[in-house]
Length: 260
Image (cartoon, rainbow, N blue to C red; front, top):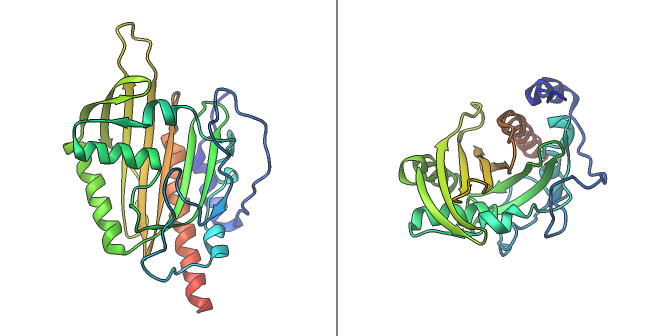
């Protein structure tokens, strides 16, 4: 069954103002779960991370932040609300390496926290690709613009600093490759990466995890998108989430200023 292009729904979503839904869905085949599902939530902390207060007064209310989220309707079939964390998070993302800079990247990927403890997650949603088993985590974060830009610069330097390295995870040795990924020109600043973690096995049967990671600053807020899985990972879905999400956040910020 051919995959519909996710970008095709962006234009209609801008005009229609798709309402976020969080209805229950059947379990997705191949996605083992190790924790509760990530339905759309406001001010939710990343897994394993402590909650921190924002460094400045947030520009969005809780309701505005939730309204700025994307949903499965924005991406179209086969995306559905998530049923929980995939088991590859524990077996492949919880890893260590000798390089401090590359270790920081692995820690950020596992915690789904690119901006560190001083940033505040305003709203988030998890989505599953029911066909290929990928998972997407979309977050709206409040942080100082200069700190967001510093993180974006760090991400931009990773293909050179951590282009190829090895790591050790619970599932065994991993060969990691980090490359720059294309992304739409939205927001005030942004950066995207594709990270491939390949299991090392003499039999050639070890799994390969592909992760698309993108971050965009929109004024005093930012969005982060992580889209990953052991099968096909749709770069088109990542692009759509970034493009639509940045425009939706910008509109929510305009609405927020009007209510002040």
